[in-house]
Amino acid sequence: MTSSDDLAARLRNSAVSQAERKLAAAFAENFPASALGTVEALAGRAGVSGPTVLRYLAKLGFVRFAEFQAAVKQEVDRQLGSPLVQMDHPAEQAGGAGDHLYRRVLLMQAESFRRMAERVVPAEFDAIADLLADPKLTIRPLGGRYSRNLAQRLALQLGQVRANVALLEQPLGFAYDALVDLGPRDVIVLFDYRRYQEDLLRFAEGARAAGARIVLLTDFWRSPVAALAEAVLTAPDQSASPFGSRVVPTAQVEALVAAVVDRDRDGAKDRLARLEALRRRRDPA
Image (cartoon, rainbow, N blue to C red; front, side, top):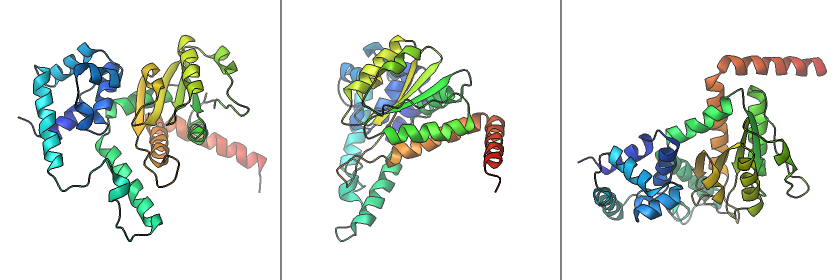
Protein backbone atom coordinates (compact mmCIF):
# COMPACT_ATOMS: atom_id res chain seq x y z
CA MET A 1 0.00 0.00 0.00
CA THR A 2 1.37 3.41 -0.94
CA SER A 3 1.72 6.19 1.61
CA SER A 4 -0.69 9.13 1.78
CA ASP A 5 2.03 11.41 0.37
CA ASP A 6 2.31 9.07 -2.61
CA LEU A 7 -1.45 9.22 -3.06
CA ALA A 8 -1.52 13.01 -3.22
CA ALA A 9 1.39 13.05 -5.68
CA ARG A 10 -0.22 10.41 -7.90
CA LEU A 11 -3.47 12.35 -8.01
CA ARG A 12 -1.57 15.47 -9.08
CA ASN A 13 0.86 13.98 -11.56
CA SER A 14 -0.96 11.17 -13.37
CA ALA A 15 -3.38 13.35 -15.36
CA VAL A 16 -3.02 13.36 -19.15
CA SER A 17 -6.33 14.26 -20.82
CA GLN A 18 -8.16 17.54 -20.26
CA ALA A 19 -10.81 15.80 -18.13
CA GLU A 20 -8.13 14.11 -16.02
CA ARG A 21 -6.34 17.42 -15.52
CA LYS A 22 -9.56 19.03 -14.29
CA LEU A 23 -10.09 16.17 -11.87
CA ALA A 24 -6.49 16.22 -10.64
CA ALA A 25 -6.69 19.98 -10.07
CA ALA A 26 -9.89 19.59 -8.07
CA PHE A 27 -8.29 16.85 -5.95
CA ALA A 28 -5.19 18.99 -5.35
CA GLU A 29 -7.17 21.81 -3.76
CA ASN A 30 -7.20 21.28 0.00
CA PHE A 31 -6.40 17.57 -0.18
CA PRO A 32 -7.53 15.27 1.43
CA ALA A 33 -10.82 17.05 2.22
CA SER A 34 -11.31 17.75 -1.51
CA ALA A 35 -11.32 14.00 -2.23
CA LEU A 36 -14.14 13.16 0.18
CA GLY A 37 -17.73 12.72 -0.93
CA THR A 38 -19.55 10.71 -3.54
CA VAL A 39 -18.48 10.06 -7.12
CA GLU A 40 -21.17 12.50 -8.24
CA ALA A 41 -19.92 15.22 -5.88
CA LEU A 42 -16.33 14.83 -7.05
CA ALA A 43 -17.42 14.87 -10.69
CA GLY A 44 -19.51 17.99 -10.16
CA ARG A 45 -16.70 19.83 -8.41
CA ALA A 46 -14.27 19.07 -11.24
CA GLY A 47 -16.76 19.58 -14.05
CA VAL A 48 -16.36 16.05 -15.43
CA SER A 49 -18.55 12.95 -15.63
CA GLY A 50 -18.90 10.25 -12.97
CA PRO A 51 -17.37 7.59 -15.24
CA THR A 52 -14.35 9.86 -15.75
CA VAL A 53 -13.77 9.87 -11.99
CA LEU A 54 -13.93 6.08 -11.82
CA ARG A 55 -11.68 5.58 -14.87
CA TYR A 56 -9.07 7.95 -13.44
CA LEU A 57 -9.06 6.19 -10.07
CA ALA A 58 -8.81 2.81 -11.81
CA LYS A 59 -5.80 4.16 -13.69
CA LEU A 60 -4.24 4.88 -10.29
CA GLY A 61 -4.87 1.33 -9.13
CA PHE A 62 -8.17 1.69 -7.25
CA VAL A 63 -10.43 -1.01 -8.65
CA ARG A 64 -13.36 0.15 -6.52
CA PHE A 65 -14.30 3.66 -5.37
CA ALA A 66 -14.48 2.33 -1.80
CA GLU A 67 -10.76 1.52 -1.94
CA PHE A 68 -9.96 5.11 -2.87
CA GLN A 69 -12.21 6.47 -0.11
CA ALA A 70 -10.45 4.25 2.44
CA ALA A 71 -7.06 5.64 1.39
CA VAL A 72 -8.36 9.21 1.65
CA LYS A 73 -9.84 8.60 5.10
CA GLN A 74 -6.47 7.29 6.29
CA GLU A 75 -4.96 10.60 5.23
CA VAL A 76 -7.69 12.54 7.05
CA ASP A 77 -7.00 10.57 10.24
CA ARG A 78 -3.26 11.20 9.88
CA GLN A 79 -3.70 14.95 9.52
CA LEU A 80 -6.21 15.29 12.34
CA GLY A 81 -3.80 13.54 14.67
CA SER A 82 -0.80 15.60 13.59
CA PRO A 83 0.57 18.71 15.29
CA LEU A 84 1.49 20.14 11.86
CA VAL A 85 0.07 23.50 10.83
CA GLN A 86 -3.53 23.26 9.66
CA MET A 87 -3.23 24.58 6.14
CA ASP A 88 -6.86 25.66 5.96
CA HIS A 89 -6.23 28.43 8.51
CA PRO A 90 -2.95 30.13 7.64
CA ALA A 91 -4.15 33.50 8.93
CA GLU A 92 -4.59 32.04 12.41
CA GLN A 93 -1.38 30.00 12.40
CA ALA A 94 1.17 32.33 10.77
CA GLY A 95 3.29 34.16 13.34
CA GLY A 96 2.61 34.62 17.03
CA ALA A 97 -0.06 36.58 18.84
CA GLY A 98 2.44 39.31 19.64
CA ASP A 99 3.77 39.64 16.10
CA HIS A 100 3.34 42.89 14.22
CA LEU A 101 0.59 42.88 11.58
CA TYR A 102 3.13 43.38 8.79
CA ARG A 103 5.07 40.28 9.84
CA ARG A 104 1.87 38.22 10.16
CA VAL A 105 0.77 39.21 6.65
CA LEU A 106 4.15 38.24 5.19
CA LEU A 107 4.05 34.87 6.94
CA MET A 108 0.48 34.34 5.77
CA GLN A 109 1.54 34.83 2.16
CA ALA A 110 4.55 32.56 2.61
CA GLU A 111 2.16 29.87 3.84
CA SER A 112 -0.05 30.41 0.79
CA PHE A 113 2.92 29.82 -1.50
CA ARG A 114 3.84 26.67 0.39
CA ARG A 115 0.31 25.34 0.05
CA MET A 116 0.29 25.99 -3.67
CA ALA A 117 3.71 24.43 -4.23
CA GLU A 118 2.45 21.20 -2.65
CA ARG A 119 -0.66 21.18 -4.84
CA VAL A 120 0.78 21.89 -8.26
CA VAL A 121 -0.72 19.92 -11.14
CA PRO A 122 2.06 20.20 -13.75
CA ALA A 123 -0.08 19.06 -16.70
CA GLU A 124 -2.69 21.77 -16.04
CA PHE A 125 -0.06 24.52 -15.90
CA ASP A 126 1.65 23.17 -19.03
CA ALA A 127 -1.64 23.09 -20.93
CA ILE A 128 -2.07 26.84 -20.34
CA ALA A 129 1.57 27.62 -21.09
CA ASP A 130 1.37 25.70 -24.39
CA LEU A 131 -1.61 27.79 -25.47
CA LEU A 132 0.07 31.04 -24.48
CA ALA A 133 3.21 30.08 -26.41
CA ASP A 134 1.42 29.06 -29.63
CA PRO A 135 2.31 31.77 -32.21
CA LYS A 136 -0.77 30.94 -34.29
CA LEU A 137 -3.08 32.06 -31.46
CA THR A 138 -4.02 35.54 -30.23
CA ILE A 139 -3.94 35.84 -26.45
CA ARG A 140 -6.64 38.07 -24.92
CA PRO A 141 -6.42 38.54 -21.12
CA LEU A 142 -9.57 39.73 -19.33
CA GLY A 143 -9.98 40.59 -15.66
CA GLY A 144 -12.82 41.51 -13.35
CA ARG A 145 -13.40 44.38 -10.96
CA TYR A 146 -10.58 43.36 -8.59
CA SER A 147 -8.51 41.27 -10.99
CA ARG A 148 -8.13 43.66 -13.92
CA ASN A 149 -4.59 44.44 -12.80
CA LEU A 150 -3.65 40.76 -13.23
CA ALA A 151 -4.94 40.75 -16.82
CA GLN A 152 -3.01 43.96 -17.48
CA ARG A 153 0.16 42.48 -16.02
CA LEU A 154 -0.12 39.36 -18.17
CA ALA A 155 -0.80 41.39 -21.32
CA LEU A 156 2.11 43.75 -20.65
CA GLN A 157 4.68 41.06 -19.90
CA LEU A 158 3.50 38.53 -22.46
CA GLY A 159 3.37 41.19 -25.17
CA GLN A 160 7.09 41.79 -24.62
CA VAL A 161 8.04 38.21 -25.50
CA ARG A 162 5.50 37.20 -28.17
CA ALA A 163 3.25 38.81 -30.77
CA ASN A 164 -0.56 38.89 -30.87
CA VAL A 165 -1.41 39.76 -27.28
CA ALA A 166 -4.42 42.06 -26.85
CA LEU A 167 -5.83 43.09 -23.47
CA LEU A 168 -9.63 43.05 -23.31
CA GLU A 169 -10.46 46.24 -21.40
CA GLN A 170 -13.84 47.33 -20.08
CA PRO A 171 -13.13 50.93 -18.98
CA LEU A 172 -16.71 52.24 -19.14
CA GLY A 173 -18.61 49.33 -17.69
CA PHE A 174 -18.88 45.88 -19.14
CA ALA A 175 -19.36 45.66 -22.91
CA TYR A 176 -19.68 42.63 -25.14
CA ASP A 177 -18.62 44.25 -28.42
CA ALA A 178 -15.28 42.40 -28.43
CA LEU A 179 -17.17 39.14 -28.97
CA VAL A 180 -17.84 40.08 -32.60
CA ASP A 181 -14.14 39.64 -33.46
CA LEU A 182 -13.47 36.41 -31.56
CA GLY A 183 -12.91 33.04 -33.16
CA PRO A 184 -11.03 29.72 -32.93
CA ARG A 185 -7.61 31.43 -33.04
CA ASP A 186 -8.30 33.38 -29.84
CA VAL A 187 -7.46 32.34 -26.28
CA ILE A 188 -9.27 34.21 -23.51
CA VAL A 189 -7.21 34.22 -20.30
CA LEU A 190 -9.87 35.09 -17.76
CA PHE A 191 -9.27 36.13 -14.15
CA ASP A 192 -12.29 35.76 -11.86
CA TYR A 193 -12.23 35.62 -8.05
CA ARG A 194 -14.91 35.83 -5.38
CA ARG A 195 -17.29 37.54 -5.59
CA TYR A 196 -17.61 36.16 -9.09
CA GLN A 197 -18.93 38.50 -11.76
CA GLU A 198 -21.94 37.43 -13.78
CA ASP A 199 -20.80 39.56 -16.72
CA LEU A 200 -17.52 37.64 -16.95
CA LEU A 201 -19.46 34.37 -17.15
CA ARG A 202 -21.73 35.79 -19.86
CA PHE A 203 -18.69 36.99 -21.82
CA ALA A 204 -17.04 33.58 -21.48
CA GLU A 205 -20.19 31.89 -22.77
CA GLY A 206 -20.22 34.21 -25.78
CA ALA A 207 -16.54 33.62 -26.42
CA ARG A 208 -17.01 29.86 -26.34
CA ALA A 209 -19.96 30.15 -28.72
CA ALA A 210 -17.71 32.09 -31.09
CA GLY A 211 -15.16 29.26 -31.00
CA ALA A 212 -12.58 30.93 -28.74
CA ARG A 213 -10.69 28.86 -26.20
CA ILE A 214 -10.79 29.80 -22.51
CA VAL A 215 -8.39 29.33 -19.64
CA LEU A 216 -9.17 30.52 -16.14
CA LEU A 217 -7.27 31.76 -13.11
CA THR A 218 -9.48 31.75 -10.02
CA ASP A 219 -9.58 30.93 -6.30
CA PHE A 220 -10.01 27.54 -4.62
CA TRP A 221 -13.82 27.84 -4.78
CA ARG A 222 -13.67 28.11 -8.59
CA SER A 223 -15.53 30.65 -10.66
CA PRO A 224 -18.48 29.26 -12.67
CA VAL A 225 -16.34 30.00 -15.73
CA ALA A 226 -14.38 26.83 -14.84
CA ALA A 227 -17.07 24.76 -16.54
CA LEU A 228 -16.20 26.48 -19.85
CA ALA A 229 -12.41 26.46 -19.48
CA GLU A 230 -9.90 24.07 -21.03
CA ALA A 231 -7.59 24.47 -18.05
CA VAL A 232 -7.80 26.16 -14.64
CA LEU A 233 -5.22 27.49 -12.19
CA THR A 234 -6.50 28.10 -8.66
CA ALA A 235 -4.97 30.02 -5.77
CA PRO A 236 -5.67 30.66 -2.07
CA ASP A 237 -7.03 34.12 -1.28
CA GLN A 238 -6.56 34.45 2.50
CA SER A 239 -5.82 38.04 3.41
CA ALA A 240 -5.64 40.28 6.46
CA SER A 241 -7.33 43.04 4.47
CA PRO A 242 -11.02 43.15 3.48
CA PHE A 243 -10.02 42.06 -0.03
CA GLY A 244 -8.83 38.66 -1.15
CA SER A 245 -5.11 38.31 -1.68
CA ARG A 246 -3.77 38.31 -5.25
CA VAL A 247 -0.16 37.55 -4.29
CA VAL A 248 -0.21 33.93 -5.51
CA PRO A 249 -2.06 34.81 -8.76
CA THR A 250 0.61 37.41 -9.48
CA ALA A 251 3.26 34.70 -9.11
CA GLN A 252 1.20 32.44 -11.38
CA VAL A 253 1.21 35.14 -14.07
CA GLU A 254 4.99 35.46 -13.78
CA ALA A 255 5.41 31.68 -13.96
CA LEU A 256 3.29 31.50 -17.12
CA VAL A 257 5.35 34.24 -18.79
CA ALA A 258 8.54 32.40 -17.79
CA ALA A 259 7.12 29.19 -19.30
CA VAL A 260 6.34 30.96 -22.59
CA VAL A 261 9.90 32.29 -22.74
CA ASP A 262 11.26 28.83 -21.96
CA ARG A 263 9.35 27.38 -24.91
CA ASP A 264 10.88 29.84 -27.42
CA ARG A 265 13.84 31.52 -25.78
CA ASP A 266 15.42 32.64 -29.06
CA GLY A 267 12.16 34.15 -30.30
CA ALA A 268 11.59 36.00 -27.02
CA LYS A 269 15.16 37.27 -26.97
CA ASP A 270 14.87 38.55 -30.55
CA ARG A 271 11.60 40.33 -29.83
CA LEU A 272 13.00 42.00 -26.70
CA ALA A 273 16.06 43.13 -28.65
CA ARG A 274 13.90 44.69 -31.35
CA LEU A 275 11.78 46.44 -28.72
CA GLU A 276 14.90 47.84 -27.04
CA ALA A 277 16.17 49.09 -30.41
CA LEU A 278 12.87 50.87 -31.06
CA ARG A 279 12.98 52.52 -27.62
CA ARG A 280 16.52 53.73 -28.14
CA ARG A 281 15.47 55.26 -31.48
CA ARG A 282 12.67 57.19 -29.80
CA ASP A 283 14.77 58.23 -26.82
CA PRO A 284 18.38 58.65 -28.08
CA ALA A 285 19.60 60.01 -24.72
